[in-house]
Image (cartoon, rainbow, N blue to C red; front, side, top):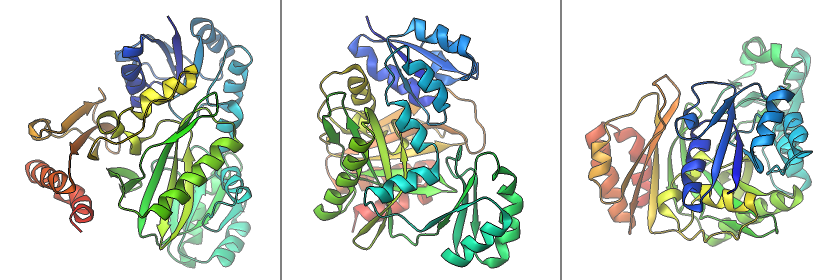
Length: 380
């Protein structure tokens, strides 16, 4: 029986473990926190990702390793890869961990991106703002996610405040200034590539964020075939250039008929959670298939789906479970402001049915603001 090692023990590791149970897989999770939620279901080793003794114990207990978050030290992944198969490969992980290197990769592949400039001092920030103009977003090059490590500059008057907020990190994780994109829609393409080079993707997803954290996802996104073709081509180019194995997400800004790449997540992704109930094969199962060298499953959608993220605390489950296509996911986490504690997916056979279900859920849970933009798209 194969044992999958997962570095990181959050909800993504938890859902990977649940998806692999029918395949007869065993797991070992390694996390730096003793209360990581995947540990409620599978054996978990608590340790520092940079501790070679801990990594050795982990490697000795598993057959193949993967990740549930992108901030695992790349050197730790490289150390493991000398001893056991690791997917995605450490090179891909390392490149995507640095926003500047990631954006440069996109440019090299001919994928459009918003203007960006490396920032390493207060003076270079001033020069970057003069080059890009405002509004713009100052970000840490490393370790930022879900809106963390970011400062929005609305005008030149914000330069000092931005440097005060993030400048101390210029010498440690680095900084990058990116032009603010007045996008019409936020999209993502979730794709998977196998060890044999087989490439598949799920239908494009439209996403809505609140304070930098995903609030809702709708699949399939209402986009024309040309945009879909373009998005998938970008994802394929990235996967092949990195010799990538596993699931990843490419986040995109839609501006007219142009797609600008925002960032890539080298793992299963929040905007693909709907695939658990809404696709023939979920992103989690296909990630495991890819990592194990098994044939990939069909990514065909089953009807239409909307995922609602629960941030901070869980609402009441009953209104979701009353829906014929309602599915509830509790991550087993304690409540905390800004923390992803669960999600729900509504699936229906038509846009009208999905919109009605979302209206009922929004009314029952007082979540009208969360569901309203999705309903607007569904009822156009």
